[in-house]
Length: 158
Image (cartoon, rainbow, N blue to C red):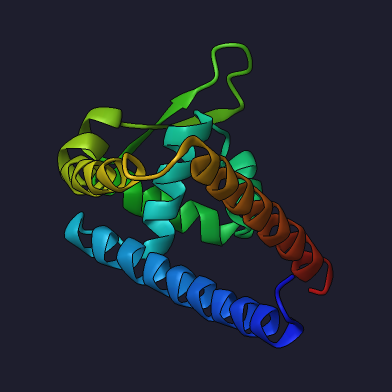
């Protein structure tokens, strides 16, 4: 059995590695955003529209954690001006506006970057066993759950 000090060192190292990964992910997203003429918040918003589908401004505010008033409106305005999203009236309720990402524009502007990174990840994942991939899936899934839970906690403190 592994002695406690070795386990404690391994856990501490893992915490360092996770912090470094999260910081590099944030910096990567910022660099991708700038490449596409956006800021990080705008890129995150487009990403949420791409992954979760069209939304009303209120729904988008909820997804992003931005205020449903001026903040999300400013993001949508910038994205629309840059050609990344469009607004359409909801056919079922003309009072509602639906914001939709322009997938072609997104893929043209930032798709090649994500494609390159995805290819590098795929090459790395090919070196892992099925068990290692399952462990990584579990780790990232749980990390995402913890982050989402903490985001909700922080929202409650406002």
